[in-house]
Image (cartoon, rainbow, N blue to C red; front, side):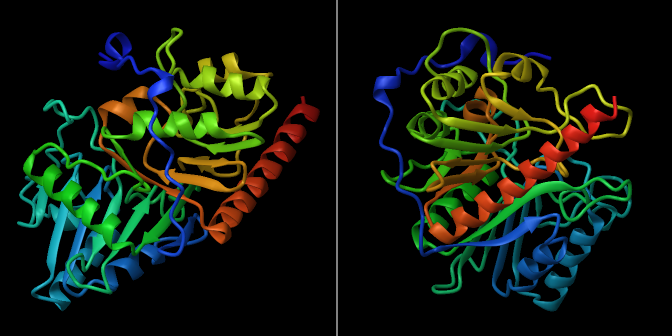
Length: 357
């Protein structure tokens, strides 16, 4: 597999980073933590749409969600329903003949980078509800795909740790609307206003996500599916940023999915090199209760990031991704409490595994 970022990662000086956004506050709410929220949180979001429902999604194989969309369209005939998908294999309800002749409101994501090249992966996961209705428009920024494992658990008993945020900030909604329209048409993305809390690949993610890691003075709590980047001494080597933080007194806790290889059918992720490089300088936990599909960073228990971005140069620069910074104290506290509970469970499981050997 050719990885375009391996030999051509952009050279960015650490001395030219922009200012880190302060974080959203009153316009943000945490509406779902998976797997506890289950599929109902998506059902409620879909059911709330009366004028428009725009969805940009990476993986979509959950037929229950597909049926919800069809039912909502039937209930509101004038509903402006749009789906941008990444992979052409969609649920049976959207492809009953198996010929990939989808409803007219289903479109392949044509996202391109700011340099005009196609993005590596259309990995964003967000929903816009009643986008042009003042006072009712909402954006849902998520780590979840429309899969059973992401929405409460699959038949094999595997479930993800995921987060879903609701953003009612008109400026954020307008920007995400512009992103959606650009990706639908295959046009370059709009510029992001200074101070925006939205983190979008490939506009500002490669500068702001590493900057968030660098700004931590006391603690970093991270849940991410993948942490990998090309080797070298570049200023944006993410593993080196974390090692530098740990060596300067920052308490870094990194929670990853189980390492591969695992038995067939058991979810895992290839972070073996990351685990080898960071341990034992950094506390790395790979025995979670749920599969860590979330992409979450909490710096100093005051500023958090939630989004679709993994900690890799491909995700931050070459894919389409959407995330947001959060400074709302109640939300950050809730995210930190969830992280702490996941960490405690994983420590206990690791201890049991060690003693049983």
